[in-house]
Length: 197
Image (cartoon, rainbow, N blue to C red):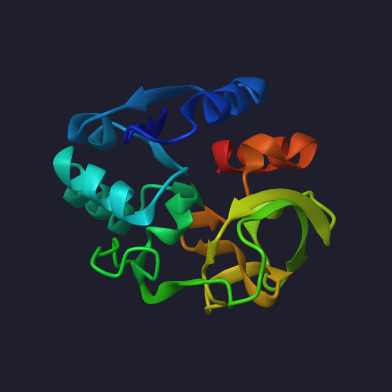
């Protein structure tokens, strides 16, 4: 069963509809027990970095989530769910990220129109199971003002003023900066690939 973590501000319904489309079994969870029972975890991300991290603390699920990821439970972070994996973000300098990856999320350079809103091309960097069966480069839908710099775990990149991580893969941890639930057939393929891992 895939657990979609409801932290109070995610685009849950759209993500759930996408999993319905690919025939995946899922449940929406709001506590540590739900995460502990999960075979896979999806953290959809809409909103503010600091608010997401505060919500995880208030819900008392942060530690359980980190333990699950370190134990190898497959995880898909969407947009802010990708950014939360890092140590921090310029969006909320006081907030401590999950810290599973070194580095900080950055704001697009001054003079760049933000948010980046719309379709952008994703290019392969390393092999990625999440993008299996998709001919790259390909276009996906983005909506964000902050980005993850390119790291060793970057499996695909996009460019908007700067090159940045569009898809992250490290073991069983995956993250996408784009929104697969808004990316049509290719987004469905991404979600199907995750469901079939």
